[in-house]
Length: 158
Image 1: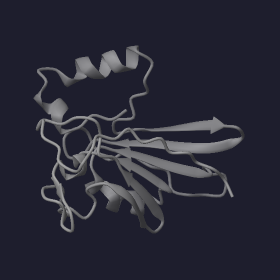
Image 2 (image 1 turned 90 degrees about the vertical axis):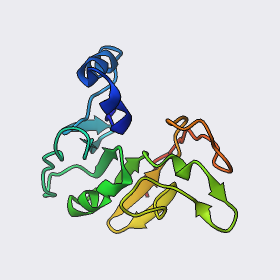
Image 3 (image 1 turned 60 degrees about the horizontal axis):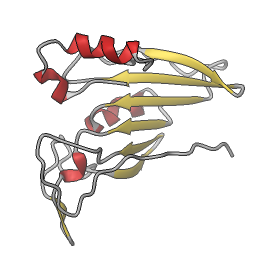
Image 4 (image 1 turned 180 degrees about the vertical axis):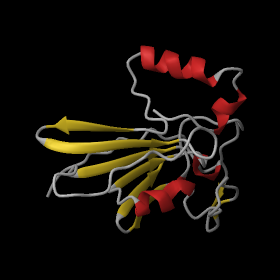
């Protein structure tokens, strides 16, 4: 997990961080973790910018490097860092899909440096594929043509 802008409103975000870790979730805020899954080396990294911490220190690709690199970022605004660090996949949220979407226009409001460009969906910005989830809630209770989303992504190798 990574934290984001809504957690800045908490009196003590570290208390939430500890509770999530105690529940068995892995805190990736400003850090990396190397996993071995079915013989594949997977690098996971977390980016909570600009609300918490720093960008994770990501090892540069090398001969014995991970075969797949995943960045979990609260905001799609961190895509430029994912591309610099050669991440294969970036998972983001923050934009809530724009909350209100009009036919032909798309998202009306998207809290991003890129406006509505990355409000939700899958985007390929070589070398990175980014999935931006609409999420399931937000600080505004109104959603129009922008249903909540829990994404299930299946990764397969060629």
